[in-house]
Length: 320
Image (cartoon, rainbow, N blue to C red; front, side, top):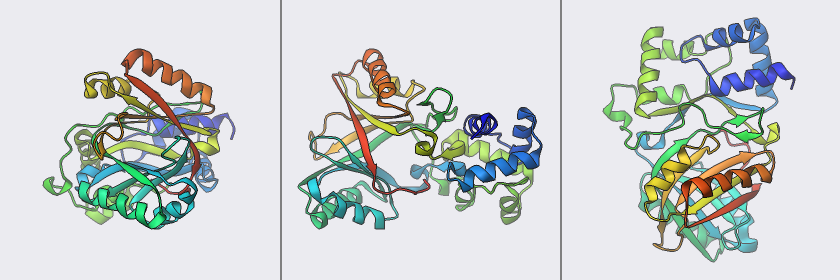
């Protein structure tokens, strides 16, 4: 990548225009011809640096629940990875350096009961020793973006999520429209197929997208990148045990620009896991993550804090 590619990636991540001709704005801002901009973006997509350009569709608006599930699988982690690989509702699967729980997945299901049943089944089928299900009580923040200049993750301006998200079925919006804008084509008119499919005018679609963003049904517009290909080799799951109000520690973590996810979790079985405030930080080296953890420790004042590093992505190539 040259400097222009880096500027393009920063624009696509942090200032993606919310109208139906977004690439026109970016080309004008960077002083590029539109065809040159589109060629560069398509090349970055072919190289796998850009995974997709579009919107995150909030799982809660779809009526689903999500959980982080950790397994004590020991040497059986490969069997666990095979099971996770075949499950389309397991969106992340990582080998991590925790001394007990070495495999961590993120799964979605229609209910918390189904998530617990999934953990029990995967534990049984992989001959793992035990599990802990960390149900999502509230998601405060979600925005996986990479500050290429400073080598540390930095969330976008639509990162903070509403506490209550309406179900899409309760809004006057076609149920498939959010899925239609999850991954947009890279061309002059990326929304053209959406406009035709739903018989909408450009200003109507722009209004709907902004409304869905405001309500938290959609989030994090712009480019989703492969951080590892950009040199972000380390991702640290920073988990904190609250020292008092568990909501305030999550609000504190969410206020930090470097945190890409912040979730308040509930342990099942109860009490098995006390570090219920969860934050993710990505960086080019562990020193940067440790520096950010020290900021969280100083500003959020947890009772205890751990950094759990990723050792291997057990479900690579997933476009989330």
